[in-house]
Length: 302
Ligand SMILES: Nc1nc2c(ncn2[C@@H]2O[C@H](COP(=O)(O)OP(=O)(O)O)[C@@H](O)[C@H]2O)c(=O)[nH]1
Ligand SMILES: [Mg+2]
Picture (tube, rainbow, N blue to C red):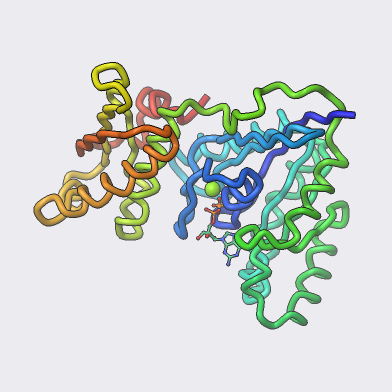
């Protein structure tokens, strides 16, 4: 018997959704950062085993935020529910163990829409590696049961791969029989150009101060594998909404941009398995987070 199915990963920002998907794939498909709202598009990761193929839909975090871009992010998360066979809700267990008062506010908005989607739901209580005081888990688990009686809770550490096999086996229980839909070596439905832009965006996240990443976007302007055999020549533009951010992204004598470029180039080369020449440009585009046409061009919004 062979199984095929789609699993939506939803939950608050920073819970570890992208980390879990990457953990299952054994490779970085979705970018991860300690800042909330790293994942912008719905990103698929394909896990192929001997007797199954699972498509994970990693989604932006679900939380209340204003603005057009944030509405797109939210929509894209909820749309993933509709096209899935099962739902994994990711929660930062360490956060709620330390701050139980946050639990209700963050869980409540999830319960009803998930119930309405009528999909089986597993709740992964993540980051248990960070809970040193194990007895603190008990009140957390019982509070979760009260708030969401229909759900099955599974404590995991996505980062360390603890209990993730158990979670996967429960996911499998919910997936229908079916043949694989993708070649076994395909790890995502996203094109490599998109993944390259995401890698650049990840390096930006790590190099910028807290508030900056939210108003930056990356576009691959050109992609040339013909001119020089064995090498991809890539031109990418980093857009920022604010003029004064341009200088910060570039850094003193271009030092910051250079570091972003070097780190991204290495990772894109790994992804492609060939040499990469990467040119990065920074352009100011004010108000892009509210511009529907530009958001669509960036793959944000359906
Ligand atoms: N200690 C610990 N950190 C984790 C775990 N899972 C994710 N993280 C970290 O939490 C942050 C957010 O992870 P990410 O996967 O981007 O969350 P997402 O916004 O839900 O996709 C990153 O810094 C991760 O390294 C875990 O199991 N344990
Ligand atoms: Mg993410």
